Image (cartoon, rainbow, N blue to C red; front, top):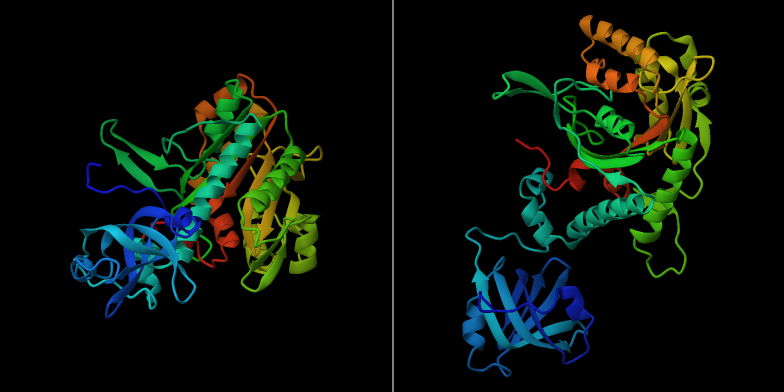
Length: 440
């Protein structure tokens, strides 16, 4: 091989071998201890951690040289046989070859103490992952989850597409935007807060089922459940309403539990998730109306308040924190959702949200496709924006023109991937499930 060594096994596949099997691995030394004529270490690679050892009796001519060249944090390549140590741990007995590939130029943290400072964990995520197998498993699960979503949507005839991150107008949600200057065009553009209107254009173009997984940007406050740069998945299906989408999402949710989460030796999948000591039951989440929970938990009727911001603020402060168990909330006041389909009486929109642990995990609409009403509602949003509401939506003339050419009935759904991963991995902050969160 070009580098003078070969990798035939990962830690996982080596541990699955039989006693005496020849293996070749490479990785980082995360623990190292010399005991006279015997030395033991732990090697971490992409799949996990495995013990390796040197024994002067097995390699009398190279033992001292090999042991001397190892330090905590070194990247090494080893070759040897699998054997069981006196403590019963399956181990690579290095007796064929060894190479020190690279040494750390900085003192490497001790594996057992790890990195204690939570801010340092974020700044030096590469060390946090190298030292803590649980953190590595967390990000591997995130990757597996996204891969499963893609596969699930693909098998249901959804096509993955890409839409602009920079746009003359930002819409699809009510939020503050990031603005940047495009030097070549000499114009200020908005970083998207949601891909919604472009995905709807794609459905109007003739692709009945589309989805996008990507970054969204909202120039708002940060807290454990909010990031200004976050990852979401959105999909749209022509000829569906919000009830069809709820049924479809339920299937995806069950699939995540069945195929992405460890079974812990159980024969049957459980839909119970232990989150921060609370058992969350995802097996059959109840469906309640928005009005019902506001009256029950907040003591107010959202339909008696004209200011949608007041309704939203009271809901977020007085109601949502009490919604710990998974629940679907349906039929929101119409004035809260300018892009959703209205009921016949015009009082509610066909919208549901999936809330878990007080977090909004999913939002779904039957989409508004009436160009006349959509223009009226977006013009009202622009009036609010002109009056100082910087969270109000912008009017996109091209989007409205697309709708005027004829846009099929459809339902769309958006889900925050970071929040879902945080729940599934028992984390309280979204920064702990993002590889490299923004830190200054």
